[in-house]
Image 1: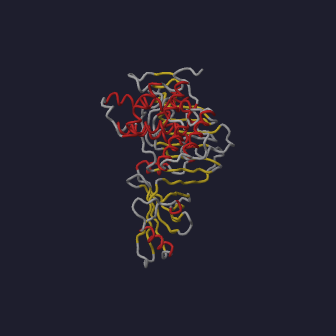
Image 2 (image 1 turned 60 degrees about the vertical axis):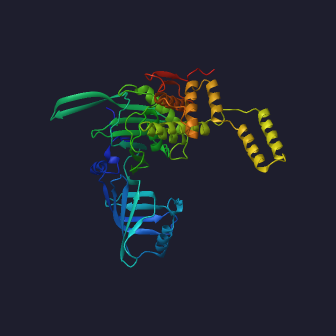
Image 3 (image 1 turned 90 degrees about the vertical axis):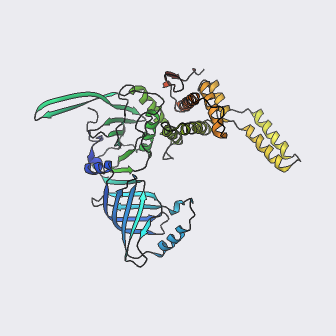
Amino acid sequence: MLGENRDDSPPGNVEFMVLKPEEWNQFAKGVLRLHCPEMEIAKSDGTESFRGSGYIEQTAGDDFSITLFQTGPLTLATKLGELFSLKLPPGAIVQRRDYYSLCAKDIGGREWRSNGIIWPTRLGTDSAPGHIIRAECAHISGSKAVSSKGNWVQLDCLTEFPVPANVPTSSVKTVGNRTIQESYSLKAAKFDHSGYVFELYEDDNGHMVLTASPHDQSVTLHPQLESRIAEAIIFALGIRAPWQTTRIESQLATTVLRGKYWPPIVRPSLCPLAYSPPDGGGSVWALFGKYFDYIMMDTSTEIHPLSRSVINVVASSDGYVNDQVFSIAFAVESVLGAFFKDAVVRTDEFSSEIDNAIKHMETWGGNESIRRRAIGSIKMIGTSRQQDRLSVLVEKGLVSVENCKAWIALRNPVAHGDWSGLDDVQHFVDKIDAARVLFYQLIFHLIGYSGKHTNWGARGYPLIDYPPIPVK
């Protein structure tokens, strides 16, 4: 049965979770409160801190509220800091050095941390013997020592969502020694990519559980493994789930609880390859694997730059048409600009002619303003435009010409605010869907995917092949 416990990687086993089962239920209901006899809120530059006891609790807005009861008078640095903060104009950017971090220990001995906290508020007067410090944060992380010698991660989503399944699961109900009901269903997935074994299933509480365990238990886990898994789920399934993550590494369990982190879209939203659970598991997870392998090569960013564009497109797919057209138009332009800079190859002769033209204008004795603008225009000729890059990709058979035309028809109105040529609403929506297919085809080329995908720009949403034309 999928999810069967193992000594090194027991998926869904609460023994290795930082929160207790009853605390998970409280968290799911939005009423979790952690009482902490030791708390400290400190400024990032180390100039001041608040210490005392208090508690961390969920708020109605799904953030976390921190309440700290400080004893003793305020420091001079705190008083000066409050005076300075009052002088910040509305809309001012808070510098990194002005952020605060939390370090707390609850009554069970677990450590909880958070960062990126904006200036805490204080209740009390300067002459009072104690003060109440209040702050809010979007996430908290807790840790505890565990006996497991394996390294793995677990992602928990408290909301059920459809899964393209490829593994059968079973359940048995018994009374005493007698079996009264036994059932089998295809409601889980198991797959293998980048040296990790993945299992995704629904537990008895209706929560989605996804585990990833490396083949080699001695390797160090990727620093952004949890985020990369969530990013690949967003791309392949079109599902942006509010994951709560736990990492088991070096006999230490660390759980990250998130409040307003990727507001949930828990149904497929025009994903690259449409599926109807439980069917379609093989192709969808192959696409997941290709994308996951590609973004795992980056260890420097919390969220991969390509995934940022994917998240924006998925987030807008269930929204207003205006949101969709802006997100897809800018996403295609962003991907072309960031990942296809070398698509157009300029000859040495062409580059030399550009240099000669610039040198000529630099010695021109006419109006200075015109001369500067002319030089700027010539330099722009030397760089490839997004449409130039698309033309090369079309010639190589890597993207469809009709989808490129749809994107160009949308991009210019978005950039210039002229919608006069898009009066037919249905044709307008069709162009958005065709541009969406172009966006996916660009990603297919980057990640090295070839196979079936859904053509959202055609009636009936047929499956078509990528590449659209075999590369010669």
